[in-house]
Image 1: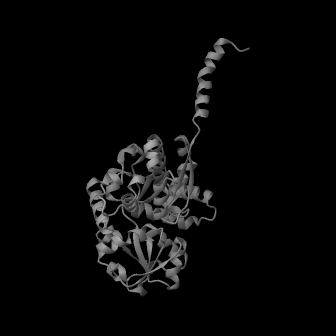
Image 2 (image 1 turned 120 degrees about the vertical axis):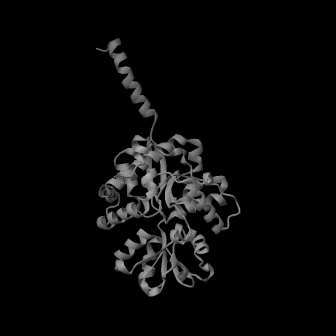
Image 3 (image 1 turned 45 degrees about the horizontal axis):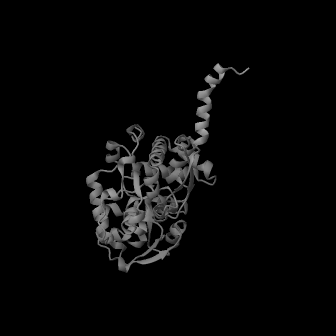
Amino acid sequence: MTTRRSLLLATPAILAAGTVRAQAPLEVKVSLAAPFDGSNAAFFLAEERGWFREAGLRCSFDSSGGSGEAVTRVGSGTYEFGIGDINVLLEFNARNPASAARCVYMVYYRSPLSAASFPRAGINEARDLAGKRIGAALTDGAFRIFPAFAATAGIDASTVRWQYGDLRLREAFLMRGDVDAILGFDSTMYFGLVRAGARPEDIRFQYFADSGLPLYGNGILASKRMLETNPEAVRRFTAAAARGWQAAAADPAAAIAALRRREPLTDVALETEKLRWLITKQMTTEESRADGMGGVRADRFATSVATVSRAFGLTALIAPGDVFDPSFLPSMDIRRLPA
């Protein structure tokens, strides 16, 4: 029999259940900066472990043709969140101030943007790219930032002969000899070329960061609408994603297992090696070790913004705060890299 006392005891549970039902997960779209591969496995690990769900979010993840596409998706407001190159975001924000997104969490502390070639092309330094045939994807961050790279490296960009194609066809261009070099992330190109039969010792890289561009790389992006209308959701998304990156750095195999459950055709060995490459070469630096993941150093970032702005020939004055917002960084316990 229902008594007054039993009703009173049940009331907190009833109210809690009602609150959960009232607060349905917020549906958000997230743009990756590549196809489903090791570079974005951390998001799937966070999803599988329930961290986005705990944050009150239901995320829909979509692959893309590169940072250019990811930045445009988030900048246009079509996607609430994404991951993409902060330098591509800088250019987008300068040209589209009314819809400027922000990077809220840095992931790559050394930019992977580079040109890859084989010895036969004779590209021994960045300036040797002048006059060469270069394959690129129009939507990729490396192509968008090439003018800045050319300006600082002393490359006459007007002499470059371009061959454009889908991001997934880029390595085939180089393997067939259709081009002398290709642009992109070092890891993506390296593992794509190895998969296609190239010998690892034959793959050469010319890094944008080694030619006077003190670049950061990919970070987590949030749309202007989300920043203005639901900053708490931005904070929760960033924290959940940060947990994913920290967990992926601690256990790359678990992250790739989560990726494979999302994408059954995943080459587990290759994508695990790719993720380890990113952790070692892009995520783990003296800076991220000392400061934790997610933030940027003000002096380095200001220099980067000024250098990239000049190289792009931007007329609008871009302040570092117009590109990166540190106010959404989560607590240090989930920003520290694993020992």
